[in-house]
Length: 301
Image 1 (cartoon, rainbow, N blue to C red):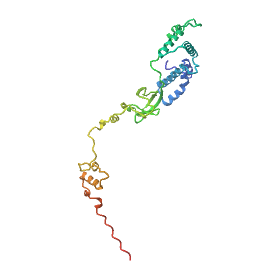
Image 2 (cartoon, one colour):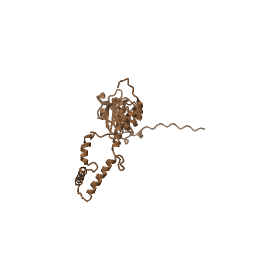
Image 3 (cartoon, rainbow, N blue to C red):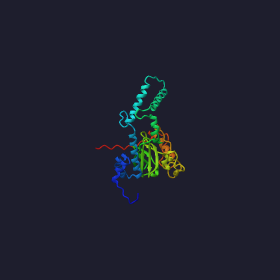
Image 4 (cartoon, helix red, strand yellow):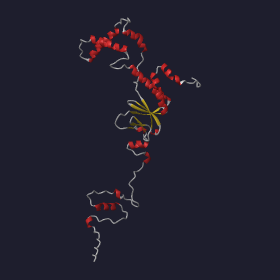
């Protein structure tokens, strides 16, 4: 298609009908509005539409249980096989599951080898002549429904998804990323590249953190090591000016049962800084000189 050719968007529903994409034709307008509002890339918009289309096709291929109305011919064949097998094995007794399965396999071979009156051939011959060549191999991986969300990386290099927090490389702080959620995994993409993958959490701790996503200082703290930037001798407690001995806070604090004078003496002994005269060891507080009382006033005449 040349660059000068114009595209008639009004024909999009008709083209989707011709391509047999009914799910895309039903959902493309709502998904396009979401993509414009959240600034999705074109690849993400197309992948979301295709995932919905594949999921609906898988649902249509599966017949509804208990009330089959989607595949009448298949259900009629199942009913015929069930009545045929049960009618011929009704009076037999089996003592193991393997013995029962072997008898059922024999009945199935008889059904496939029996000529049909209307077609004049057997089911086995029809399968080999018509259906076997058109069968496709099973997909290598099971289809998994995924939900896409837009998120922004927090300052703690985590993104929120379905009520839980998952880590990404710390260099992506404040960046906008795409989150793909399945029933088992959570994947984070930045500009089309996958930058993180986690097992999806449904309970327990809210944070799921990969140590490889941490800055070096955080990872060193997590491993019980000091960061390289702060390597060196451990800092000691601050000392009093002009003194090489430990401060009063480094002295051993006595228990509550000790006399109050012991604390003062211990602090004075720990620091040689000139200060108030210490109390005498062993002198009980009650032996201190009492305060001088004021003389009584003379009575008025």
